[in-house]
Image 1 (cartoon, one colour):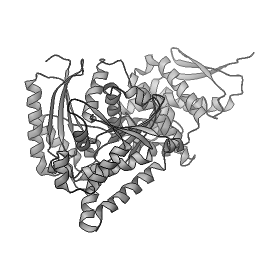
Image 2 (cartoon, helix red, strand yellow; image 1 turned 90 degrees about the vertical axis):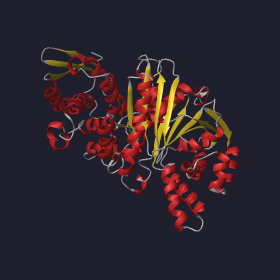
Image 3 (tube, helix red, strand yellow; image 1 turned 90 degrees about the horizontal axis):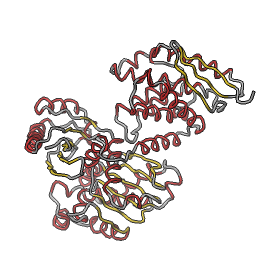
Length: 509
């Protein structure tokens, strides 16, 4: 086949799947699924069963044969975030590589949510209409749920909850062995988990009514969505009726009614009860079931990166970062100014840093979130920023990119990588250099508003033989800023070999 064709393989907790797509036209030419489940027990803190590796290898070799038969030379394999959390995930990944030659790239939850959002935006016909007012995209993963909120056509917030159908299924299995009324107890369990999660959302998100776009509900999708379509709309009343029917039904009845196998019938009740609760808390007007998943998102993202779509979704990444900063009460005026100065410095210093457009995006995110540690304690807030960011699932960013942003935030203030070698040596050399360059730029930008007073609104940058002249435009006394700049600029010299020099130009002489 031509170079336009791409093969994507996704290894998930309960299945493995291959999709071959013509990136130029968006046409899917192959879709193959294997029900080999190598990680179904990981939510009980169990390791991946080594006995399933042989089955996984056989399935992957089958995928490779399909790829070869179709003449596809461009293909990649990803593993879900849930699977990567298994205690022996790296051992399993290495065994699969040795036996198949396929190296699994672990996805983060933020990446999974982001690529699904991309697929919905490009493939759902009435997407623009749905997100124009208030809408929530609810994405179900095996062990977690992501809620992305939209208003006026733009993402306003994205949050992850550690509760998903397979995780709930394992709770239900335990309840059936111990509780006299397991369905009622399970419903209470789901309600408590969702309520604990939802009370931390901003007030406006907790009170707005939403159109709900639901993805990842495979058993329900298979029943409601016609074979020749990717979506189906239900009213709240229709879904509530369906929930009541499922809650009181036997597995045998559900298998016949919903055309399910024994493998996935156990997911129906957990899935339905979770969705019913989520529809309540987001004040859903209607439910739009969409038969797209992470695999569809990965091929969509590949088509975007290949230049076959003019749409780019980096604004969602920045909106999610802004939401995170707002959640931790970052001072917005300082944040906006540091972001403005950081990007100006980055653009004017391209001949020095040779970083990529993606690095520029990471710098922008770091400038937004670098002060979130102040919510915990202003003393050594940069260390708290590092910790909080490492524990955050940031929309659209890989685990490595989140680590870079956490490290850049750690080094924006007092400490530098040179003074923190024990922490810094854990990173590979290329990543260390990127962090050092981005940190050097962010440190100077932050110094230009060290007092958080916005006394400087405009700067210009000029690169000389041995110096970088940064001219600031202000009529104010800048003694503190000069001191902070001179202190923080030393690391810039260490990294780039040029001495930053601060000059002031008065606006009114």
